[in-house]
Image (cartoon, rainbow, N blue to C red; front, side, top):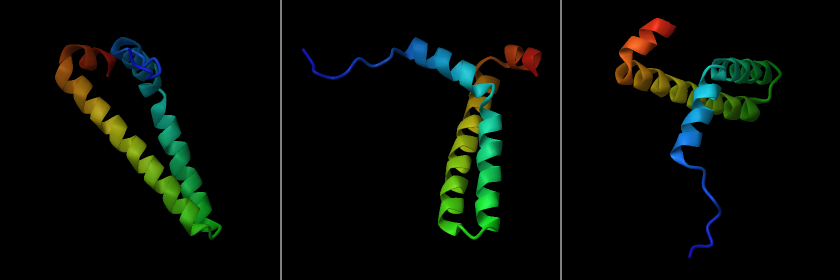
Length: 80
């Protein structure tokens, strides 16, 4: 018996990601805009933190794109 909290199963995690990935581009764009705004107002440390967050999110989207392209090319082409 483990005292670990209940972890979501992989199916629910995939379902969550499938819904999130469609709109995640807007979050990446918004984070990039905030980073630029912080840079323009002289808040360099916060700007760089936002830039790192945007970069990580963008990398996640790029990985998701590649996985979908390789995993189910026909479905990817239909949705494109």
